[in-house]
Every structure is written in C-alpha cells, then in structure tokens.
Image (tube, rainbow, N blue to C red; front, side, top):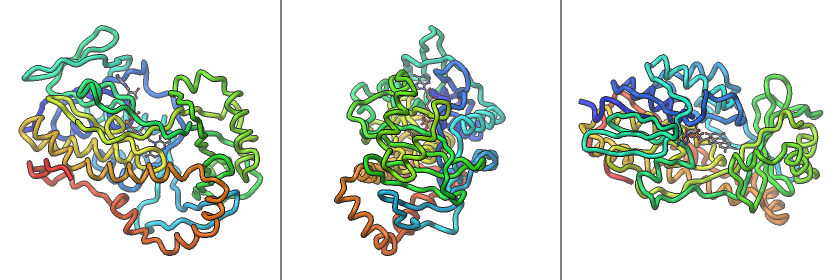
Length: 402
Ligand SMILES: Cc1cc2nc3c(=O)[nH]c(=O)nc-3n(C[C@H](O)[C@H](O)[C@H](O)COP(=O)(O)OP(=O)(O)OC[C@H]3O[C@@H](n4cnc5c(N)ncnc54)[C@H](O)[C@@H]3O)c2cc1C
C-alpha cells in the first residue's frame, strides 16, 4: 500500500512536473499548482542537465524528448584573462551534459507529466496549508482551495512551503552574483559543443557556440546589492547592457560578447542563490523537493539534476512506505548527505569566481598542472554516475540520515 493516494504538488518548474509524473507512475494521483498564470513563455536562459539528471529523467521516459531539444556539451575548457589554460578533465564513458533552453525544458516536462495523467492548475499561488490527521487543505491567493493526502513543495528557492513547514527555516543565501544570459556573433572560431569557463578581469562568465553559429554566454556579475528576479527585471535592459559592457570591456572574448549582445537577446535572471542546510525537510503531511530544500547554486551545474533525482526518490518512498512520516524520513535519508555535499562544492566554486590579480596569475600558472594531477573520477564520478533503481523497493532502513 502506498503512503498516499493523492498529492498536491506546488510549483510547475522542474521538480514539480517530474515529481508529479513519478507519483503517477507510482500509482499516486498528482496535481500541480503553479503561481504563474500560464505555462512558461520561454524566458530564463539555458541550463545544463548532467548525466545523472538525464538518467533520472529516463525513469519517467522524458530523457529522449529532452535530448531532442538539447545541445550536447562534449568538452569544457577554462580561460583566465582571455588565455586558454586547458581542457578540463571529464568522464568519457557517460552521456555529455545536455544544454537546454529553460522554457523548452518546462514544456517537455509539462507534456510528459500530462501524458502520465497529471493535472496542471495555473494562476494558483499557495498562501497557506491546513493539516488534519487524514489530509491537507491548500489555500491559494485567489481564494480557492484544494485537498489531498500529502502536499509537496516544489516551489523553488524562495519556497512558501518551506516556511509553512518551519517558520524559522533558513532563507536562501545570496552568492553576491547576479545572473544574465546574452547571445552574439563572435569573430573567433569556436568548436561547437565546447563550453568555456572564463575568469575575466572583473567578473566570471561562460560561453559556448550554438547550432545557429552564434555564441551564447552567461554572465555572473558581482553585486553587493541583492536583487530578486522581479527587481532585476524592473531595471531597463539597456542599463544592464551598459553595466555588462563596462564590466567585461577588457576581457577576451567577454568584451566582444557584451558589445555584440543586444537588448533583444539579453536575459536577466536575477540573484544567484545557494541554500544553506534546511533543518526540517518535512512536517506532518508536507515535504520539500528541488531548490526549495537544496539549491546548490549554478556553479555546480547540478541544481536541476538534483531536483529531478529528489523528485524520483520522493515518489519511490511514497510508493513503498506505509505512511507519509516514514516515507518522508526515508526520502530525507536517501538525499540529504548527497545534496549537501554538492552544495558545499558549489560554495567553494562561488568563492573563486572573482579572483584578484595575484590569484588569476596563480590560476594561469598552476591550473593546468592541477588538472593533470586531479583524480576526476574520484571528484566527479559519484556525482555524475548516480543511478536510481526504480524497481528496488525502499525500506525503513533508508530513514537514517547520513
Ligand atoms: C543563472 C542560473 C543558471 C543555472 N544554471 C543551471 C545549470 O546549468 N544546470 C542546472 O542543473 N541548474 C542550473 N540552475 C539551477 C536550476 O535552475 C534550479 O536548480 C532548478 O530550476 C530547480 O527547479 P525547481 O523546480 O526546484 O525550482 P524552480 O525551477 O524555481 O520552479 C519553482 C516553481 O514554483 C513556482 N512557485 C513558487 N512559489 C509558488 C507558490 N507559492 N505557489 C505556486 N507556485 C509557486 C514558481 O513560479 C516556479 O515555477 C541555474 C540557476 C540560475 C539562477
């Protein structure tokens, strides 16, 4: 017997539709409630799905559809002050990272979830939850309500459900960086599928060539001032473009990328967050999944992939354990150590994104040697080879955290 027959999933981003589709596969009827009035309109830039995330998507049969809209990233290089310092080590016997437009990914996951039987409700901003012995009642900002056996908070890094579970829950931390994405023509020839991580004189950025021959780049702009997505988008795009052109002016090819980006191709993605450890992942019939409980920051390239893994593991636990309390404890036991370890790696990477002149010279001199000496299998193998066996039953022993 499953721990629940019905589930309310709050949030229609990445974790929400995957959790709902996996719950349907587990025999639990799931409905998604999303605050936005309609499915994503394609804004929000691109993101890379790691091999572990792609493998987890295979469990809900969404991997092929994602591959069909993705650009495989077949290699990664690093540059400091515009000087190439070498190819990053990689695991060669697994699928490459798959770069997708966020809006396209949302559409694929939505369509897959609908095929699995999930019902989506838009314009439903969760504001409160009442729990009873036998179920939950969700209240939305438009005055409507919904009931189910359990409620799953897949409502992102500024989660409402997190605070409903624990009013003292930590809020997302700010990395001190604002995210942007642009697109430009570049005179220099680039190999398609190669992503470059570039440490510029004043800020970090990354870039790769797309199928249309243009170059997409992501900027991480240092900013002491925190700006939410809404606040950042309230500032006119031409003002942001001027700031980016100034910041990357002396960088190669950063300067050319910033100058070639127009207002029409600039996407403002707002503050980049990192979640500190969340003491309470669940309470009663409510539980968290995805960025709401473990946003490792964009530096890891794992946020979406971890959200997908957690979604699948949560559905397995609800499928196999007799009640929400034991299912949520087992889920936390399966996930906490892994996601917190990857988040710590993200924090370390974030702290190196704005090196001073001496640190940049050190990186130029020693990074190639460090790449050669690095045991990449030991560092990245456990992250990228993580595999979930959907058919293996979850038992109460998984409830041990750590
Ligand atoms: C600049 C940037 C680059 C990134 N690059 C990568 C990358 O390359 N690879 C990677 O793996 N990850 C990347 N990430 C991280 C990745 O975007 C997140 O980890 C991922 O989106 C988490 O998915 P989620 O479903 O948990 O949350 P979200 O995608 O944030 O979805 C949450 C959803 O909940 C909805 N919602 C919020 N509150 C409510 C409410 N009260 N009621 C109803 N609905 C609500 C929101 O509208 C939203 O649709 C990047 C992030 C940023 C900012």
